[in-house]
Image (cartoon, rainbow, N blue to C red; front, top):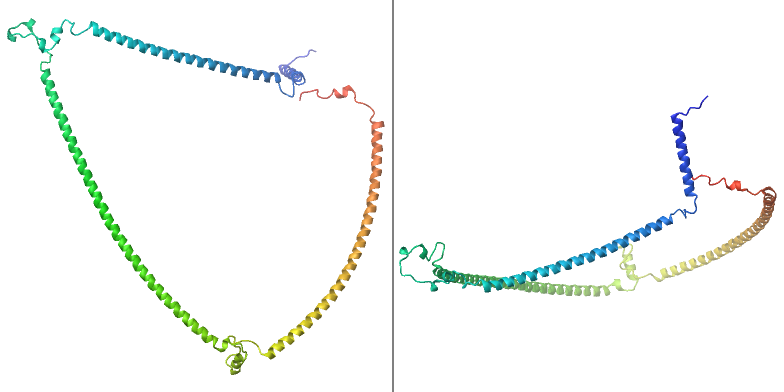
Length: 373
């Protein structure tokens, strides 16, 4: 039997071969240490830097050349402009000189006709009897030029005179208007001054009236204070002379005997000698009780302190026993850890010296980094 290659299988084989070729090229590119330095293509980067510097240098040279060319062009344009101006000035001077020498009015053929009425010939023959060759005035010529100029000068003088009169009249009107405005301002200023003076007089009168009113109030307040002070002095004097200001205790006792009120608070000035003796006696009794209470509290505190001292001594002894027990447990734990360390070290020596004695061959290391993925 013959093997038949179908189109689908051929395309798959082509794709596999293409992937294998791409993988081989990738391996050659990645695992080539000559063209790879820390993942950067230094040669390409240096070339790019040099190209950029070369391009910047070319741009600077081009800008310098362009500036020089533009400066030369500007200088050429300026020089050409100066030359054209000098040429036009020289041509105008030559033309003016030619006109003044070669084209004078008195040298023309019609000089006798253009010299004015003073040099014209007078002919006594009437103009109607003369032929066409004897005509002196033609259509379009200005016969009354002098008269017209004189009339124009008169008209100009008259206009100037009217303008001068009109300007003087306007100046007078402006001055009159300014005088009226100044007079109106003076009138307003005078009226404002009068109004301000009236307002000041009113304010002055109001201030005077207010001062008089304040003085009257001050006098009234002074009199009222004097009357109040006299009344207080009289009341104080009456109070000082009354029984309330005395230091006798029998004044309140008499009032109590009268049966007016149970307690006379405004007339109480002290206690009787019997009441003072009762108070001192009660104070001595309280002092004895307080001293007896202090002795009792002192005895109680001493007993309590002795009990606390006993308890603290027992607690210290218990703590000492616990410290000894913890020290013994720590020594036992250290011995056990030391034994474990010795066993671990012996086991490691057995692994290094007896079990792991075979060294890896070259084939073991060649199995790594065999693909680029």
